[in-house]
Image 1 (cartoon, rainbow over the protein chains, first blue to last red):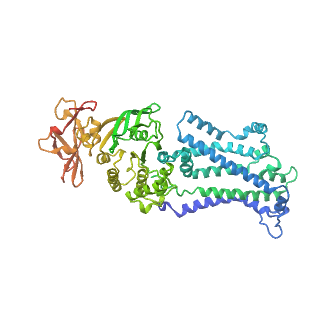
Image 2 (image 1 turned 90 degrees about the vertical axis):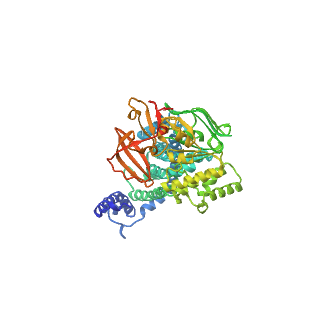
Length: 279
Length: 331
């Protein structure tokens, strides 16, 4: 489409820079992957070599499978991530819609208050959160993590989504009102599908920090039955000895689910049926 | 019977008063056009009638019932929006039938009304298409169809033609006029385009700064404007205004003469230098300077006039309107 501006050198330069960045970004992942298939000695002898018939070993994966309940950890991480994302998107979108759509007293103050959360890291409140969780008996449950992550993700979600909600055509919402749709139907059926790309962005932003978090699982839910994958992998890192095979294998396996979730969300970024609704 | 009655309607957003003391009656079957420059409050007034905005004070009566507290869907109105506002996830049939489904109408009724509306608007070939697969004109017809199926007591149109190109605009305008003849329902139509207002309306309401300037039939407003604003707003090219002092020394009124009422004559009172000429084939528009005042003259037929030429224009006294300093018409 932008034929006039393509210049082969520009294109090459652009692709060169992007490829270089991709290589830099993927290199650590690549090193983890190849080393997870090597014997311990081979990892330290030649960390960058590909596994060959001599050094190839599945010992790391075997250790991971044997020790601890890895599938349970997987499941816990998955439940916590998916449930947190669900609540962040649901409540974030609802709050954003209220802020963008309705004129009420304190609208602006409420928006600023919610945006404050973006600037203050939630970890500052760890002690208070722990006390609350102990008081409510939620320690060592997945709910503790889900609630904390939802709170952590909401400010940014509200901020991004309300910006997008403002762009949804007023005429469309008004047409719905005249046709007798309830405010909930207007929100869920008309507005949400139109801000789906923004929702996907929010989901992707939130997903990886939640999946990778070690802090809150360690403090709020360290019990065996609620351990998340990141916390579960820590058993292989000791003060004196670290089972690198096992750590690398566990990390390799932890990449997969996020990758799948990412693919699901990124497909939503494609805007299809939204065009043609207005104008 | 009155289809709509507005009594002392006021609307303000915080400190800003956008509608001031609007009084209006719309008779059954009447086509009323709200016209005015952008920001005059015409769209806000329409939204107050629709129930999308609440009036700060005053009464809105539709079909003899005060509807200030009635939600839009229960007011017996249907609205067509400038941006069409079709539901992107529904096809043409779905778009048209949604309101009836919400109203729990029986299936047979819904089908029959959708069929009738799509026949009227030639939408039958597109009935299963989605909005994204339709052209601008087709989308606007679907939006009109969505209004028709509800069989409202009052149609509201919010600048429905401004997103269409010129050729389509003319066709759609005729379609809307035909529709009004066929249905005989009262319609309220908002536009900033005075051609649309003149051609469609039974009654025009001219608004400025949230106030009604004048209400009347198109020809009443054209022939008999109450003030300088209405006189200048209707008619194209718009009316010329110049100080009466140019004609009679010492007169401090303003004279208004329509471009078509000025003519070339050797003993004309206006001594003008031509600055620009527009040849339209049937007409010739001449823009000229009289002292510091620009005037436009519409000459019928083709005239070959050069820029920079000096000409004299005259007008008949009965074609001149006089206005005082505040723009009020003096008779």
